[in-house]
Amino acid sequence: MKDMRIYRIIPALVLFLSVNTINVDAQCKAFAKKVCLPELAPYIHDGNYHAAVLVEGEEAELYKTFYSDMEYRVAICGEDKLPNVEFKVLDANKNVLYSNKDANYAKTWDFKLQSSQQLKLIVKVSSFNQPGDTPASGCVSIMFGFKVKK
Amino acid sequence: MNKKCGISTGILVVILIMSCVLEGCKSGGSKAPKEDLTTVIPKDNTVVLQDMTQAKKVFESLPSPIESAMLIKSAGARFDNSLLNPVGNVNTYVSSKSMALNLGIYTCDLSFASLYEQTQMIIDCMNAAKKMADGLGILKAIEQSKIDELEENINNTDKIMEIVSETFMNSSSYLEDNGQPAIASMVLLGGWLEGLYISTQLVDMKDFNGNKLVGRIIDQKLSIDILLNLLERSKGNPAVDELIVQVKGLKLVFDKIKITTSPIRPEVDKATNTTVLKSDVKTDMTPEVFKELSAKVGEIRSTFVK
Image (spheres, chains in turn orange, red):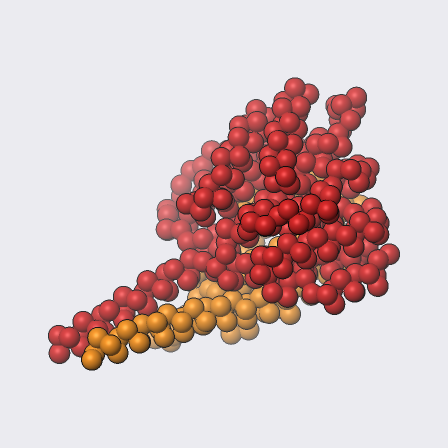
């Protein structure tokens, strides 16, 4: 009898988790479109979509080639329930080229390159530093806009 | 009591397994173990990816079809209708792999046509892309209302690019969010290769040295490892495995090109609040290597559009 019950519980649980994850991702996409996309104006959004649910203290990394013909804006947005989202841009030798910590956790950074480069972005959700509390989690999205260099 | 414990443990195991599986599938990111931050990496621009191990999520971002088309135009290339994948081919694409690759290809063609204000081609490519997206079951990626909006704004390039960008984001996010990263990576590969194909075909060999378009083609060497990492996340999928072999063949040709970059010096232009990343680059692609690259790209592309 108990075995029968577990056979009913497990598929229901699996379905719940699947639906829940898809809903979280859909919310992340809606957040990215509503909050992050407008930050790119007047640059053209490149059409790529990068978003993840991160918990306080967690990091995400992104690798992308940037071209010398373009001017870029990167927008990194975290949901309001999250503490500040830090982001750093590094070159191939791990030199930090930019950190938004030095710009009061700015959401966007505008840049252009003299020669095309593959760069690495590290995005980290900082911590509220309140021991005992459940760590905050929420959607963080990374989006790129570009325009042809003048 | 023991039985209860057994059931609870079983449920916990299922939760854990499902959490891991689902977490691994979503949002285009891959999981990676922690590593020591002090690891030394070689000073080669193409090996940044070797450091790809410390974050919870790792994203590989290829140039989107829109960016690829913009790079071609900014290099001063002309428009050549004959280079695009004929829209009459749409009905021949029936497998998920061919539809995914050609969704990327038609989106790149659409972006290319948009930048050169080829009105009829814009509408045709959008319809072809819609057919591919519909075939892949990507709900609401390209709605009829978007095609109507496109037609209403057919002479407004900025608006068209905005629509293309939105539909491309809808497709890729749908695939990632619904556990289809393999299909999502194929779409990106299709778009990237189409941009490379058009670029290589537009190079005039009489004007090879100092050709801006050649420079943009060389730049694609910087993205090939990103592309391989993206595909290798879906290793084991037979369609992706075939593509990995093809892309590795292309990488062998790219490996013949040397790119040397001086250290980057960030300088802020206070007037525009824009950081300029200053560095010098030296490259050495010979016309022979270019011809080999062009032939390889054409060979791979022909298997995608056949």
